[in-house]
Length: 92
View 1 (tube, helix red, strand yellow):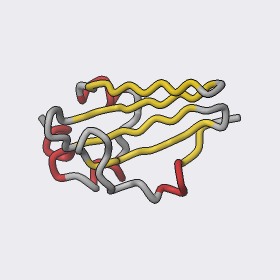
View 2: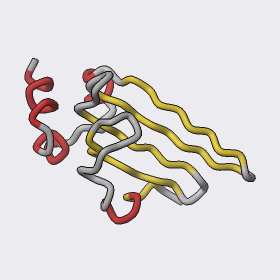
View 3: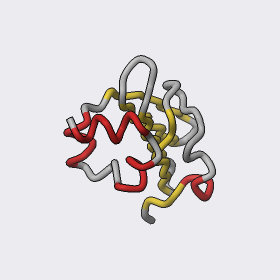
View 4: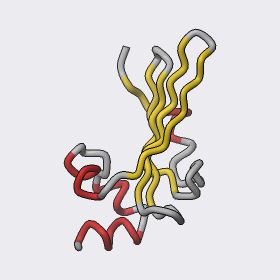
């Protein structure tokens, strides 16, 4: 199995668990999900991971510096276009 867009990308642009704007949201058929947020109130970028395995649920949020997120290819031109703060940060 591979990664695919969560809920047909309906969550993109919505408020995420860290009060940021969801800019990428993907899940894996084996029970994992990663949500990337920008423009958060407590930090500019967050990655929230959810892993579900045999009725055990693990949820963790991670602060991401822009250089790390950019190198990982998580912020695409489309996702940058959705957020004025992300566009400004990417030029800094």
